[in-house]
Amino acid sequence: MHILLTNDDGIEAIGIQSLRIELERVGRVSVVAPDRERSASGHGITVHKPLRVETVSFSGGKVGWAVSGTPADCVKLALEGLLVGQRPDLVVSGINRGANLGTDVLYSGTVSAAIEGMMAGIPSVAVSLTGEDHLDFSFAARFTAKVCAKLYREGLAKDTLLNINVPDLPANEIKGVQVTRLGTRRYDNAVHKRKDPRGKVYYWLAGEVVDVNREPGTDLAAIAEQAISVTPIHFDLTDYRILEEVRSWDLNRER
Amino acid sequence: MHILLTNDDGIEAIGIQSLRIELERVGRVSVVAPDRERSASGHGITVHKPLRVETVSFSGGKVGWAVSGTPADCVKLALEGLLVGQRPDLVVSGINRGANLGTDVLYSGTVSAAIEGMMAGIPSVAVSLTGEDHLDFSFAARFTAKVCAKLYREGLAKDTLLNINVPDLPANEIKGVQVTRLGTRRYDNAVHKRKDPRGKVYYWLAGEVVDVNREPGTDLAAIAEQAISVTPIHFDLTDYRILEEVRSWDLNRER
Image (cartoon, rainbow over all chains, first blue to last red; front, side, top):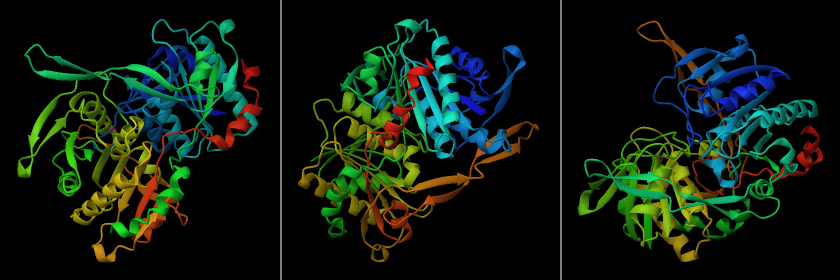
């Protein structure tokens, strides 16, 4: 199994390096990741300027590619440039420092890289560890490597994407794995207005996260219950529920 | 009706200004848009640095806000900062220079702004004009204003988002309106590898667009038939089709 590994915290982050070491037990790993942190980059791609690539040496003599772009750029560049003739069997993104739950996935560079893999017809996995500080990635890395091996054995559909969130707890305190749907989060009081040292106003996006839909069966509920959430994701944003309603409006009359 | 108007081509683009003038016939318009082009910014938000806001004067004595951020930043900042106490009834994003069809919506700053509006519980519209050069936005602007007035009369569900694409054709050559689902596009040969003047390698994302799924009923098919496409969008990326299959894998055994 050949795995393309990327992230959005940057190629030297502990999360991706912990995961690389575990993935190397189950397959060959090519690391193509941003040269620095790209959090909240969303599904951005870099089209108006060139991308630079530098090789980086890891412990154990392995080498990866650091890219001056977003996580989605890394996957595009890997598949169409750096790894031509060596198409990966799996794209893995993470381990992100901090959860990517519910509506977060729309902003998540970590998940966008996996969506890019899936759009290229390669089964993909995004993985995040909840919490922010003093994180221990070792359990999440081992679990993800096992899931990747399992997916490969199961013969994954090429449009599969699994978004995994692991609670930041010792392994023996984690209460199982739940296969979930996405919940809904919102950020309240999301803008701070301040003055700079010269008296000019600036704004900073902030906000307390509020779980709007944390019903049983959602990823938000699973994490609240200290379980691992595994959410299958697709990329068809069509709202089929209201197609017929909108058709009934006869928008041809508005021309 | 109070409309928040934004885009990703920048506040001075002809597309947003054409749309502003038409929207002012059907409601009060607050313009909060990026201070420069932000194409392919995806659903990025700016969390690691401050945002600056400048007022900009338009023709007719109206004033808007130019923001040093992405389209999604503009909507967040408008709703939580600039327009507190004046909640819009509708968020409109566009008119984008160039189509946002099928899988494009995942990369689209234009659509991401409308998703941000919908996530805040406000019905939203994204609108794009196909083509790149010498575009005439006047028909698309008039059509969008009529659709917005219609939506307001219909009493929109607050989680409605309509993604509109208008062919770049004279009004009398446009073959009606189709309410569609998203098709699938892919970009082939997406990376050019070059050498800079100092002999160092760089890469540039490029690629020919390929319509992978342009079946009847998709937005891609509508545009190919020279019709306007109107696609309802939601933000739940859960892949319900494979939830049960993934549950059957019993991932608890991989811990």
